[in-house]
Length: 236
View 1 (cartoon, rainbow, N blue to C red):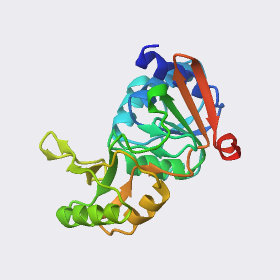
View 2: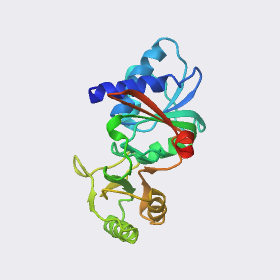
View 3: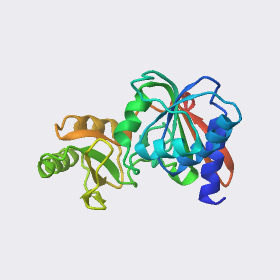
């Protein structure tokens, strides 16, 4: 199956979880955009939802396609968020932030009763870390923050390249006005420990490890669509 076809199939399966009247968090990235296109067709057909976008990019697409949008301040408690992931493991821990929206994505996911992840089969991994971990940092003291991240990683026996993500004019800037440090660890055996270590660094605004947020992952690939749930994985 073509990667885009897989993304469309995962998005189509996730659409089955959306009910009329829902307050819906809408993710960012190529797979989430396929979901937005399918959602827009349902809205045009009469589905009523209140969408809360996780990025300006998603907001623009929703507005172009006629998906009704609200801010998180207007709808602070959401029924469901549907979003993509750069990596997902079998316990539904995620790496997100490849699209640069990890802070807003995590805020929206945390404000939701449930989070469903949609992805093609290439994103399902046994151990997180092959995809570089995005770490959103404050522009003030970036070098100091990077050094602190490197030291914290070293204490966990993690090493690799640390790169400030480039943008069109200097460093990439998130919707919140921050920069992103991409950390290429290769493997992250203990995501919980790394999450705690990164949160302890003042210059780190947020990081792309999403732990205990996703309740369902819909994975599409050559063998069709597979649905993983946090409950099933924890039992296994």
